[in-house]
Image (cartoon, rainbow, N blue to C red; front, side, top):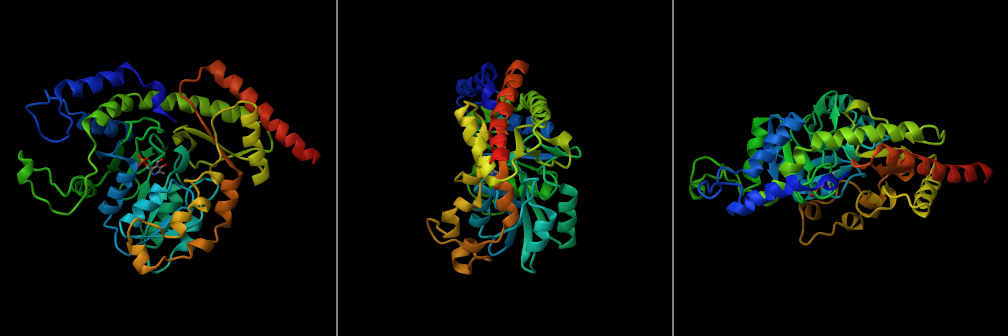
Amino acid sequence: MPGTELFGEEERKEVMDVLSTGALFRYGHDDLRKGMWKTKELEAEAKKFTGASHVHAISSGTAAVSCVMAAAGLGYGDEVIVPPFTFIASIEAVLFAGALPVFAEIDENLCLSAEGIRKAVTPKTKAVLLVHMCGAAADMDAILAVCKEHNLILVEDAGQALGATYKGKHVGLFGVAGGISLDFFKLTTAGEGGLFITNSEEAYKIADCFSDHGHNHEGANRGMENHPILGLNYRLGELNAAVGVAQMRKADYIRTQNRKHHSYLQQRLSEISEITFRPVPDPSGDSGTFLNFFLPDKDTAQKVVKQFAEDGIAGANYWFLNNYHFINQWDHLKNLKAAGPLAINKLGAPQDYHNLQLPKSQEVVSRLISFGIRCTWTDEQVAALADKMIASIQKVVKNLHHA
Ligand SMILES: Cc1ncc(COP(=O)(O)O)c(C=O)c1O
């Protein structure tokens, strides 16, 4: 999914702007900066691209999810429903806020399902942290309905889903707020960086303060600003923001290319009857960063991944065995290992993390291959890739029938 494919003159120009002034800090120093405010520009570009009424750019996607937790008022002892398939950052943001993760089932859509949430709700459940995985949205109508039914706060981690929409609305804007990552591997990158997006002015103000030691950013004297709340330093530096601005201006082009290649590959691979694709409730809103497809079972999926490697096909992600995206490998979480005690160590985990019963999630992720789409592919390259992928998969599925 990387915007890094298109790193070039535009990014260099923005960075040189900052280096020419030495104004590396996002706030104040008006005399130094010759009118250049890269973090603010990034926020303005991201507002245009996502349609959010408020965007606050910060130091990482992880920090963005922490700000989302803060903005929703979630903290000590609050039980928050989370998916077992996500990047561990989502779970860490819950834990480091002092809250308690409760794992629920995902389905073939790769996100928490409404049914999974419903089954995990207890009288203690306060919120749902919905993660829009692999570049596309969850089933929002159903999820909003279950949140309403049980009076749950909805917060979103759209870390991997910049550019994904559901019925025209950008992911991250369905609940209180959403976090987006601009790390090195995303649709667009700032090197390191993140976006907090919301349509709530109140939520925005909390994130704005929380991410800068509680500063309210009112008045022209930073040293005399008020601090309505305590916070931390999750500020984005102007150098990273400079890269982020240039990249954000390319987001629409990258998404258009990704979508074109994504639908072409999907259409070609659909000739293999053993393959099914991730159901996306609003396919027109898929950001096209991954082609997510399923093989009939775990063994076949693993054989296909191996066959791709043998045939020199790069780009297949098999999250089931990957150390940070699926719960099976999260021993540090299961053993509640943190540098110092967290709320969960004192309060106890709300579930036995060593014995979670999530058969649907296990089955879905074990059959899943997420194939990374590159925006710089030419039509000829993507056609040749489709030929190679089909040939590789056919080798495996043919053997399957003979076995
Ligand atoms: C779903 C999700 N949430 C949060 C993050 C964290 O983002 P960052 O690496 O910018 O901290 C990621 C990163 O990959 C992610 O995939």
